[in-house]
Length: 329
Ligand code: GYE
Image (cartoon, rainbow, N blue to C red; front, top):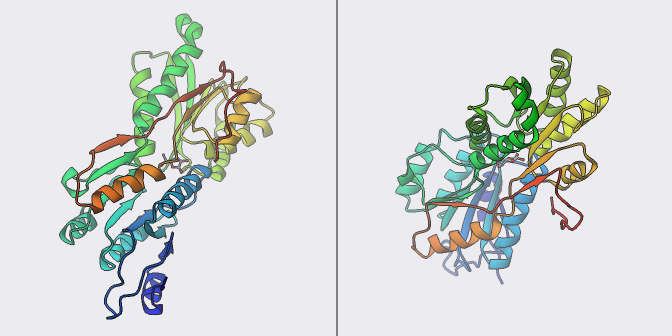
């Protein structure tokens, strides 16, 4: 099997891309290489959490297994890097583009460029605000449902305090501002609790889905607020920082306050089993096979479903988790 030429590789490297999952056969005439399996340009937002690295691994493994040639770009948490990578995918004339939009807005122009180049775009994991005509479809997590499940757990957990009239004081650590994951979780959570004024969200701030910021935020919250009944954290990465800060304050997480979190990383499932966390909402990162299957469908010129939510569940403090298989992230 021949390989991508040095000139093409140089171009890719200049554009911050890497070729994962196979090589591209060189055409004798020096034109664009003969493709062996479709070429998928994939823009990932970064590696901010164990969830994210699992999402990346899932895509790369599924691409390799399907013989899909993956141009992979890590945006290092910057939207401008994602837009640059998508433009390079267009220049390279990939068959399909897929990306995780770090935030919901600001994609119209580059999506119009992809449309004008005749390249279908698949939105994955997080959602965008753009007109549906600018992309082929979405596969990813249902963040609003995740937020609702967090609220529904509290209705169950605090049934008696509710009957006594509350107040039940909640602190929320939200994810990346402007991301559909943070917006959706906040929306679903508030929708469920709205009919119960006994629940009071006394503080909400963004920890950007990062463990370090979750720790710093929780330290300052504990210095400012007493009698916190609930911590709702938008992802397990921040929750791990929360647990460190709560323990450092000589408080017992899961007992002195209930902790509800999203993702279901192994480390936090372990904390649930230890009683340090009370409810873990699963957010499924293993989206690779679905993404690759949809990309292959699009490359054949066929249409796909507009909206596909991956399967997700909820783990409660009262569940028997002894038979739960390893999470893989
Ligand atoms: O919850 C978090 C990651 O976009 C749903 O992003 C994903 C979120 C996930 O940083 O861990």
